[in-house]
Length: 581
Ligand code: ARG
Image 1 (cartoon, rainbow, N blue to C red):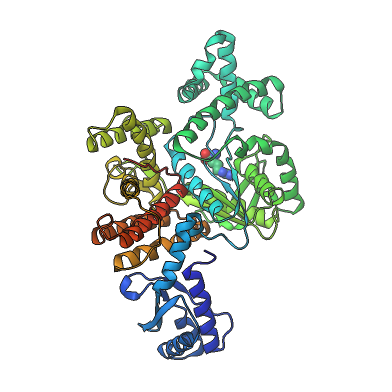
Image 2: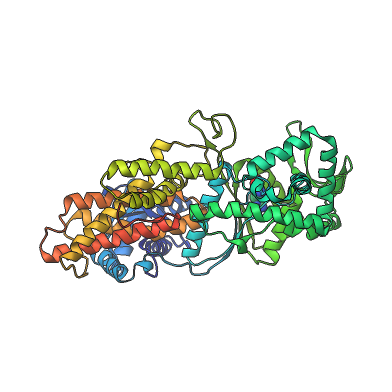
């Protein structure tokens, strides 16, 4: 496929409106029709042009349709004017079949590639390494990973950046604590570090209770940041351990981040002074209580006073924002990014608005770069407050994932009591992880959402088990068909259910491109859910295996194409399909 129906129609209708109105470069504004009664696509571009010219929109629509009808066109069967001046468009069966049959031979071609690939930097997951990953890191990790998969699929060059926090004051405390333990009983350290959460808490308790230790901890940060080799060595040991914890999670969650994608805060340590000087040379720095800050007129606090962005504290220490400014510069200059995305909690919105604004004022980047905060809401418990354990602690991500697999195991054994235990377990691993991921991805990312086990692990509704089961079911039909020598032939259309299913399959490309641009993976989830629903309707209305050989082959082929679209879509969400369930 070179272009989708929507893209072609947009061009054709846009050109026709220009022709009939005398206005150059009109936009056809073609969208997928919301109901089959409205045809397959709907062009909305007439109204604004008519308004501009003070003309009757239906009259202009009439003229545009006449113009379109006079053109040679093998993709459209009919145009119909509706409402105040929309054009409803029905695609010809010949065009549907020709694309479907090409896709049958080459299913990857279902998704078109962008004409001009961009370099897109995606900052995601990015946990703080002082503690173990907890549920707060789940959304950013999952959403970010789906976005990079989607953008790569359409042909962009993606640079993943896992901007882990490895450089703050907390590390001084942890290093000091490690040194103490090493002094006492050397052998036990690795074991102590196996539960980072506990280790952090023990260090923090000591920090709060023991002023001498707290002092030691503060000195340790300074030593570390000034590059003392012995401190650096202990720090390395800690970071290594913490990264191993993250990797275990990435592995379980089927996340594509690797060590090569690390973009730790410490990487920018040597650039911070330079960034500060640069801000100073542009006249942006002011002093406030001994700290170096930037005031920008667009940021005012509740009290009406300007809000500062702190660049350097009075003790010389740099901040989270300073590191992000250095990172922005790097991503623009060195990585040559066209877009730089930050898949980060919505609660950091002000931070990103500020660093983006400072970077703009200081001209830290090229003009072409688009800096975008891809914000997401908070994961809530059933009581509507941020998700916690019963005792009110943050939930470790690893525990949550293990629990999901356990629950999926119960679900799978309930559905197939006779299934072998090993097999159940391997199915449960995929279903459990997929359920957590899908529940998250299927929500509009900007809102908070309620984490609900029974909903995400249901075989009904817009869930991972439903889609994975739909896929496995199609695969089982195909296996039966193959046993009765199904030779892949050619798809044809006899029933409307077949037509609607084909049209839907061919729309996958538009959806994926829109996710790549707007970064809302829930659009892809909705699409896959509708696709599976249309398959079920087709399956009920059109007998497959019991039909005459021609129809049977066509329907098996259509089932095969559906399976491929489902599989490709789920893969872009980072969800693995199962051949049997
Ligand atoms: N480490 C930060 C946190 O856990 C997130 C970093 C996001 N990326 C960035 N470039 N600021 O809150």
